[in-house]
Each structure stands twice: as structure tokens, then as C-alpha cells.
Length: 176
Image 1 (cartoon, rainbow, N blue to C red):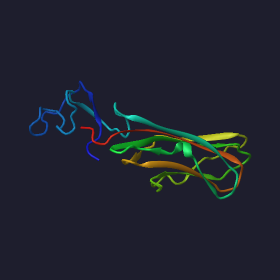
Image 2 (tube, helix red, strand yellow):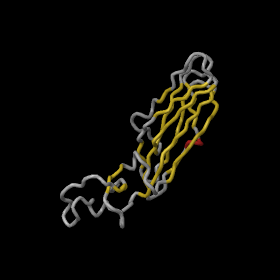
Image 3 (cartoon, one colour):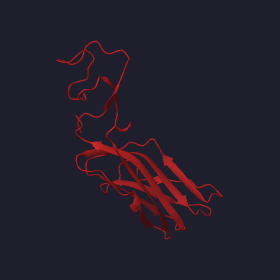
Image 4 (cartoon, rainbow, N blue to C red):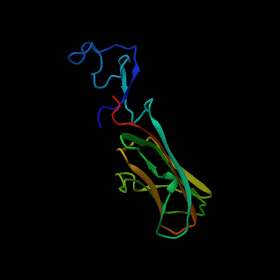
């Protein structure tokens, strides 16, 4: 995916020698921003670059039948061509809880569930009408043209409202 990150000017000490053909402590030419001073390289998968565009989706859908899979279309996001991105925060919501629940959320990227994103659950609290769980920090990296979808499976057949919210950002893949 090329070099990632962006530079923040730093006043701290610099290394004594940089790569061949560069000033002492300067980043390699392939990672420097024209006209900028050398600084700290930040990971764009953790900190949005200055040229990042937000990715945000939220949805709430009813589910009443056991075994049904509910797609949450408001959480369907796509990374544009020649861009890469990240989902940094995932929140799932279960509304209209009576006593207990058995619902599983899955995040899919291009129709495939990445490892660790296929069994997101909410542990209901007795007497709570709604429960939400935020999975943060999340670092779900997205390639160019990635399509992110969220689905929830109602295993026990309770009449619930199933919701999710995704937050992240994308930026040009070839930034330098």
C-alpha cells in the first residue's frame, strides 16, 4: 500500500544521520511532504491524516424471527478507488430487550468476515430496555473499493430492534 502516515513538525532531537542523499535526520524522500519540515511519522490507521474523508454509517432495523439475518443498509460503506481506509469504531445496539437475548453481529468486507469480526455480541442487563456496546479502538483496514456491510443474526427469535454504527476514514492510497 505504499508508505503510510503523515508528518507533524517536531522540535525534539533528530537522529544524527538520515538516508543516503538526505539531510541528517530527514525522512526518506519517498515519505516527505514537499515543503514540510521533518517530524514524527503518525500511523494513518490510528490518526486521521489531514486529507482524510470521514466514513460514517448508522442503522436500526427490526428483527422478529429466529435464525433470520438482518442486513443494516445504513451501515454499508464503500472506500473509493485509489483510496485506503480504516474502521476505527464499531458500536452495536440491541433495543426492546425483554429478559434475555441471543443476537450476533458480523462486519463484512467485500462479503467476507475478517477474523475477529464475526461474533460481536451484546450482553443484556436484566431490566434494561436497550444495551449498546462500543468496540474501540478498532483497526479494520480497508483496501481500495472495499465495501463494508453489517449484519445481525437473531438466534433466539425475540422481537428486537438491531442497530449498528461504524466510524472511520479513508485517504488517497498514493499520498506522496
